[in-house]
Image 1 (spheres, rainbow, N blue to C red):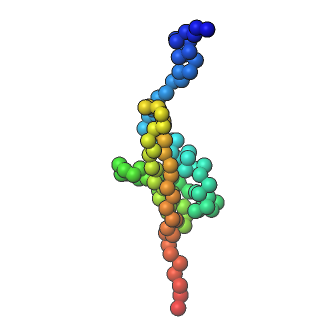
Image 2 (cartoon, rainbow, N blue to C red):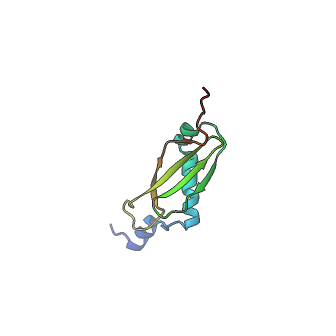
Image 3 (tube, one colour):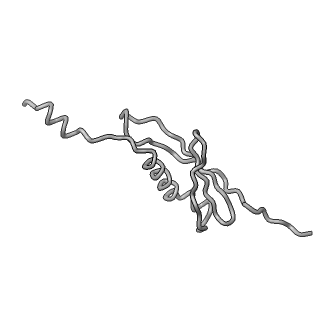
Length: 105
């Protein structure tokens, strides 16, 4: 049985490309929004996600009416492919209250 190399290659070859910075940011924000840890940390609060101005680690600040929460993006090495969308995991920090409770004497 003979097999054509070209037909075999085209059958398994899939276009692999990296994401643009804007697409990568959108993928990271989507991952944060869909991560159950977000709701565990802030409940059902309305929130805004802001990308922090720093190189590494890439971090996002989640801002609610009552707290802020930092989420770091940790990039992972590619599996077997050399190029393609960046793989990452998220690290959720503890939520910090904006206005700590004031106890009256």
